[in-house]
Length: 246
Ligand SMILES: O=C(O)CCC(=O)C(=O)O
Image (cartoon, rainbow, N blue to C red; front, top):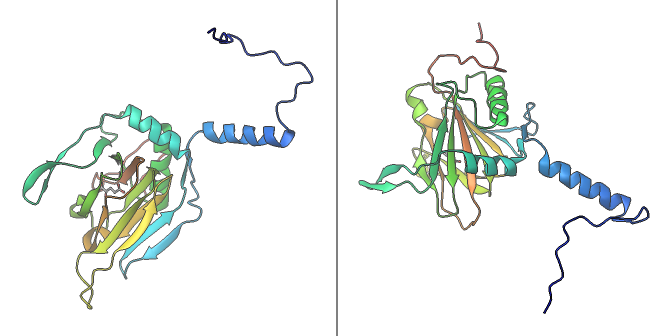
């Protein structure tokens, strides 16, 4: 049986050849633009909603804050040095069920992608805090997770602000009070985050609440980027960052 030879050149179209209608061509063009658009965050934080958990703790959510999130997760999964840490669970050392990586400007290494500097600058402006590190958490599939915890920045700052930017498959992100309400119940709240959604915890959230990403029946990966302001009261200077407030 003979095989049809594979053409080595694109077929030449005559002047009158019609590939698609004008509307179809426009749609294809828009899809191409969307697929290859530079990732970007919305500096105006359009669509932000603040939820007060109680009188002193709040959560801000901006759906789709990052556009081009699929490109960001693909690039970061390929470029970052991933590791699996050991953690203590029920008095045993076990491998953490997710991969992590870390970036901070100490050592002046630029962010792994330009859009991350854009995100850090936008968060710094919005919350008037020097966001100076990014923790990356890769949940390879629904079996990966992080257990209930509060972030350590509560030991450094009275009211740390922690911003979680999610890419990839949406996963539930849960928050619950550390102590039960008067009725004895610890009600948790859930936000489903992925695909460029931003969630920011502030006020007394790290003191009075804990959060987790439970295991879930999803197949795709989710990568969260956690922006923190670690360096105490030190104001981080950097291209695009506003000067230290007087
Ligand atoms: O991945 C997330 O959404 C949360 C990550 C987190 O809470 C942490 O790493 O401390």
